[in-house]
Image (cartoon, rainbow, N blue to C red; front, top):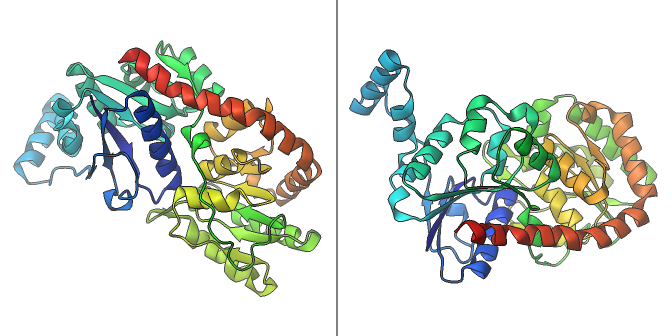
Amino acid sequence: MKILLFLHGGSLNRGCEAIVRTGVAEIKTQFPDAVIDLASYEPETDAHLENIHQVFRHEQKPPKKFSWAGLKSAFFVKFFQDEKYHHQYTQKDIISKIKNYEVFISVGGDNYCYGELPGFYEINRLIKKAGKKLILWGASIGEEDLTPAKIQDLQRFDLLLARETLTEKVLKNAGCKNVKLVADGAFLMDKTELPLPEGFKENKTLGFNFSPLIFGRNPQSKEAAFRLIEEILATTDFNIALVPHVTIAISNDEETLKEFLEKYKETKRVFLLPNNLNATEYKGYIARMRFFIGARTHATIAAYSTGVPTMVLGYSVKSKGIAKDIFGEEKLVLGIEEISDAAKLIAKFEEMKQEELMLKEILRNKIPHIKEMAQKAKSYLAEII
């Protein structure tokens, strides 16, 4: 059996890396002889991933305006209001390979949180037209993200694996009949422990992750985050490890975190982790932190899954849903509108400190169940193949 994983953003997004790492491992456990290929936006970042037969680039190049393909595309749009040819050309490096695989697994579960995706809808339509199996692996989708076109596309899938209960409810309420609840595969990912860098004090280091995505959506949030860091430095003896979990060109955590480093380097208590670690290595550092505060969902999953009390600077349904499934409520999750309120950030940090032992106990008891939910994905996959 040949399987294609597609819509992978590349391993400089360690969340994307974690999903592919664990997804491939789980699939190979269920189907040891499966041949798994990966379509990636940045294949040069994925050479270290194991059990993948071939990685190729997914470029998404639209036709040039005055080329034959561009003129043909313009003709169909102008006279028939039909964009199918345009999308088929743009996505041709996936579409041309449909004949080569029996199973297609879309690992871009976050994609459905960010507007319309007509090019992806066209890929999915042609996969199903060819009679192949189509799976959405570990999705998060909010009610506010749904449109008639998106619902129609989601209903094409043979299997929708929702990674938390909020998404499960949204999809079922939208009339999708092919929904199964799992958990994010990153909960299953191993950690790699490297030597501790200078400044990293075990049991006295707090991890902090902040992203350009958050700053872009709420420009006042950075100033509030500065005040939170100042409060931590003033009221605790913790050192602060800045964690760049996504370092892709268009959304590089490191660029934002360097502002924090520059602002507080004279304290000698703030340091920046290297930008070239893989997902398991970042998880190895996060696992040895006392607390974690993070914007990137998979950085917070690395913390949750290793028992580290965590405060989430959330921006989508996935952050809320994952916390709810662990704690029974959206515990220590701040929405995008809230994170520009420095007083609220500081209050949540104090709450996390005061409830440290309770949070650790909940994580100790709950994470094994979450991992069991993540492992169900391969069984649901087997049922439809």
